[in-house]
Image 1 (cartoon, rainbow, N blue to C red):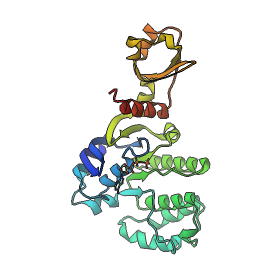
Image 2 (image 1 turned 60 degrees about the vertical axis):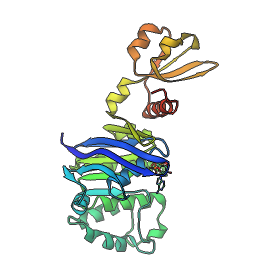
Image 3 (image 1 turned 60 degrees about the horizontal axis):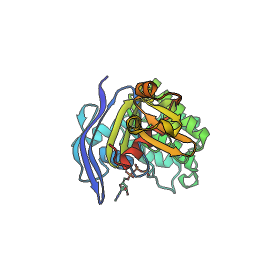
Image 4 (image 1 turned 135 degrees about the vertical axis):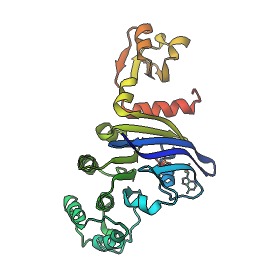
Length: 289
Ligand code: ATP
């Protein structure tokens, strides 16, 4: 699969916070989730790769083309949904669309009308009367109506109720099925990713912690529960993190075969993406890495 986005050696500083040598690659045909705890650097990374921040070093290639000097050409091929959604509140949905549409070479009025209908949005309604979920759907309708090949979204499910979130996930699946080449979206609602992501990238304190296929990642980790007597300096080394209380311990491991061999009578469970994300963040915080 050809990379649809290649980021290498991206550095960006905001006071005490810095993106440090961010490198990753999005293969074509994948929905990729970008995860990390609050303040990890998800929005800063997305804004930096989209050229919305200044003083960024590193190389960013979309569809094999350098972003530097080709911004307009590249952005024509992307649908972008950012958290704040910059709209003029006094305009109607239709009027705002008339402002935005001419910026895109491949704007498709029919797609836009269909998305508004699908999202039950009234083109005559004013933007300042939209609920948060409606605003997100409107931003998505705009992003999907110019034959974008890559959809980039910052926290699109944030603040949406479960019904709207589930509709959004179905739209993303349909988009890929219709020939979309990739979806890249940041979120800390990891349950959404369990449902649709193919690939996961985790960022923590401005650094990439892992990029892995979701199924592989979930298969490679296990939650282990047992009595604290099972823990000793050797067995503790099998775990990314361990929590202990009066009832025993809960740990996350990538060394399940060692645990099975050396720790009897423990409970082995499948982790969620959230378990893995938090274990990695905690481990890094404790500087065990
Ligand atoms: P969240 O999940 O809370 O949205 P995030 O992973 O998207 O978090 P960022 O918004 O990228 O995190 O923020 C990363 C760090 O960069 C934070 O410490 C934040 O305070 C800092 N930061 C972000 N934007 C700016 C800015 N314009 N000026 C100064 N610092 C900033």
